[in-house]
Image (spheres, rainbow, N blue to C red):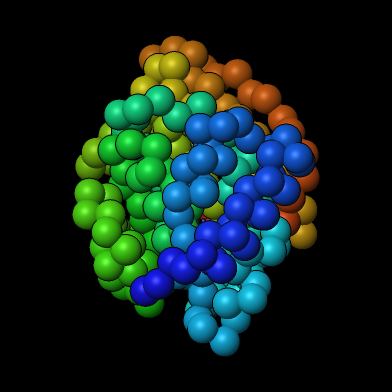
Length: 221
Ligand code: SAM
């Protein structure tokens, strides 16, 4: 794996673009500057690594658009040492950004192939600390709950209640919710032990569907 001056230059341009778009603050964007996004692309597609767009990976899934990664991370308001659950590891790119921000991270992926690829790649890049889990993250991951932050990187038909249960009071869930075609980004803050919340709504996005028990599987049955 090589991170040449050319790659760094391309990445610097992307980061300047994200600053200009005002999608996130310095901490998030500087973390993104430190993660070579081209490591997540096959060499034939390197030219796409530093464009601000989503790109197909294995299993009909996508590596999220950089501005979306930046925006979701910003909404999480990450503090050093936060316990974070990421649902939808995908390529592992967002995983690395969260690790760069010194979180205590558990990431869960439903596709066994993506789980295996991302786990190997993220470790090879040099991040040794994340907990990789294979399974249905729509149910959360109770083993390490409560979390201070939960990030869902796939579009959900509604907010899965187990995720609220697994948040600490004061914790934040960032999740795109809506139809299969269009989801609104929500930031949900848990305000009491009784699972009361406040909800802030942001722009619309288009994510691949959240699968599993509390995802689209339930609706299709
Ligand atoms: N943030 C990732 C990245 O940077 O590459 C992109 C994630 S991709 C948009 C969404 C991922 O969520 C896919 O890899 C998909 O397999 C996964 N996914 C969908 N439903 C899931 C579920 N119930 N539990 C865990 N992962 C799920």
